[in-house]
Image (tube, rainbow, N blue to C red; front, top):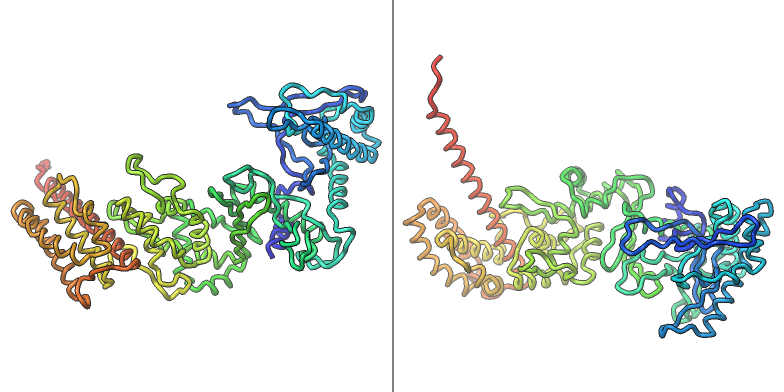
Length: 600
């Protein structure tokens, strides 16, 4: 199914390169003179620190490995074109390296001449053929600074890229097909379900650098079975995976095109996700990392209009596909594969934003967080830098959150205990961490009838942990109001203990709050009456809990504690801001009423 969807995308994709051609960086250009007797090398390497773009061109390519890899047509490394040997780790050049370089140069020359024989009418091609057949490649002395891995492209006397000629593209595709065909075997292709000539191996690989890796960047195979232990029945290569040449080449070309397109990929430190649709559609995927008000409003409106994912799929059945890949040495690891519809995805993304929306009491508005910010907030908070430490989030969590967003699935089980540990250690709760708590506490995101925690303060919530968190926030507000210049609040000192064992902490803090309330009654009567009533309501709600204030809270109850604490703080801040705004309006109205009127 995966290869079939990629092959279908190749049928309508714009910018698909010729068969078995990939973009390569060229370090040297070999230009032959018109008479075919001499040639010149033009250096194209950019200096270090230069802002000038490197010379790049679509050139012949295929996956090659083993001790005797074959050459590419016209564009290849200096080891193949000029026979430049590979230098050993100790800086010496061994005889075996020289012999191997000469073998590769001879095979490169033979391939080039076999193609040139098919283009007798082109004088530029024949000039190159004359130069190669007379041993010109062996006579050329590699210039200083040329490495064996540098790419060299051949240019005609009239400055044409010979590998861009239609005859070169046709000859290269034919040569690759003959080399990669499974001994002429014909059978039904697993991808297109049509009978055709089957491949022994996938000719094209995923481009080096297209998939993030912590080690050396290298080409990789999507389908690779080269050991008996890897294949069913002890067979290797594509015997149990029949793929015809056309489907194999076009599916890999489409995948490399998607991997190179910023509009269709999302990279992390460990993986890359590409997405595409069967027919053109809105770039919904961008909303996860760049949630604009307009885009989120459309997604949420569509969710409220049609909350059932099945109905949403019927309304917009356009296919939507997302593929997450990682690298394991020279093989591609498929971490996730999503085959859904645009209608269902729109429903899932609307639910994602609704399920993590948080109320910001400091601005008095609701916030939707980008996925990258949620991942970052799961890591360590750096107090000195005033931001989250990069790459401190749990490994693989970003891919798990992405899967949950696209499928409306539940949060990974490890998220909640990890997040609580980080909140306790960092002593920091903010909007993205509150959003993660809402997602993690949702009972069942796949059920459209189920609802998770409210995005703002929920007076009807009777969860014991939630009530304890609210009470702790009120106690802290009382202390802050009575002692505005205090350096360390009860939140700084007792938050970690209160979220795990609230009974003893809340009881002691309630007794200690009496002194702060007396000060507020003397100095700030309005604040005193408001906070005293709020405190009474909080502990009245705790008294209604069966068994009283819990002695210990389990993991989910701890999460409810943090959520109740943060939502109570947000509500208090919003109330203070509203009260301040109301007071300012009254003063402004009073000033206008007392202003002298101008006589008529």
